[in-house]
Image (cartoon, rainbow, N blue to C red; front, side, top):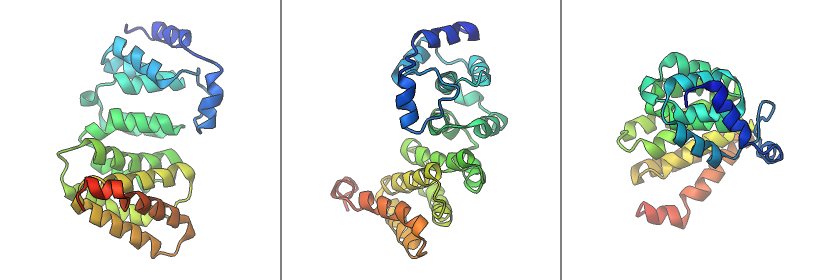
Length: 226
């Protein structure tokens, strides 16, 4: 299954045009979408298997679900910095951004440098990518040292003012995931949230208050044995 036209026909065969409305409701750009539920795209990805060449070709179609499939079947070991930059500049929807980060980018040797680069970008989805990489790393990179995440917290504190929906939610997500990683990082994440509140910036307050609500919850404190 390595023919792009065949894969596109398979995607169209499982599309639900009526589902486009639900996608749009969740803030997904449906201008080039077919209307396919993510579990169905994942099922097709399992049939196709890992295929970096096909992943790159599917991405070039510009079709929303084809790009999601591309992130599922790509081989992170073959992802280079050029691809990361190109795909990131193509992002036009939060779900594609998040899947590409979680399935591919965060597993590459470039993820830390891209956090620092993208988190200070102006474009919404480029900037979101920087913070999604932080969140995905906190969840999935079990061997990553605390020092990595400690170097990210000042970025969160600096950028918390950005009130654009897709940016602030990613900043908040990153802060919460770092704070839930372990007891040591929890203390630093809570301090970062309090530092944000001390900025007296109403745009930044939501990021901090929402993070504190979870980080100081009984569930999280019990999990971290605090």
